[in-house]
Image 1: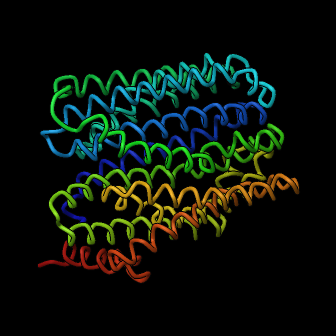
Image 2: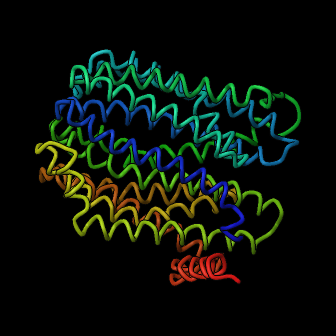
Length: 431
């Protein structure tokens, strides 16, 4: 695989991530307009919403790529994915309703069920469309869908900044619901003529669930330290402490979103390579894709820890958020493990979903031990270490499998450097 052959897709995907990065700066403005405890509550609400979508995405929507790459099985795969995705999402809303009294003992959020059914309901079709376009490498349409989402919420934040200079939790939650619905509608308009459902042909429901269930369990386990750590820590630490940690994770989201974009491209290409039995293509894709991600993250980690984080936080956030600097700098080191954990898409494309589930369960044990120590000794400023050590363990397990089966030695993680130099020489200095 030559990266320059995919420069168009990568450019639109990177454009998408630029939108996310810009929203990261807007999020800093949002932090200044909310009380620290309120921002902690908002972070927890959004974490539950994202957790629901991630679990449903892996249980239902991952099958859109696994079985939808081939045109003959696409219509049935899309139907099963959409129905199961909707069912899991709405079932989560029911769980929130049933557990509302229990949750309210630990979290002071009024109308939590109403918030969740609004957020989750508006997000169902948006996530479906995301997976649809990722499968087709149609990152241009994805860019505009996310532009409506992030641009819309940014416009609302600036409106409140220039009018009341303050945002309540309920206001920003409903703003998220509206932009989710708007981006879902745009996605529907994009695919309305192409979307086809069928109850005939393959895959069978049994086959689909056999693949999806381990993926759902993996996602459920993986999302505990990644998404629900804020909800868990909220039972032990103050809303203010959660607000600081939430601010650090908001800044860290840029790295995660970049990792998601890379995973989407790598998974679809890897699945097509497996279907074509083209192992050399898979190996080349694996090495160059993860190398590009790692080298980029390494550069960013270095400059952030040399002082850029402090400059950004002191420029954009009030003094009450200064403790987030240390927590974010801890989290950015975690970013170096994202390229290794992203190798799981190659294991998934082989159909070995139970293997990555085992890795996730083993990592959860590590997280639980670290979490117990942090909570017992009351060390809220060390909250990032829980997710960090989890991802370190998980990424290491994925890498060891890839090294054994694809010959991926450590030095290949820097492959993109000489490749980029050669590309520049070819384009800039060619006669």
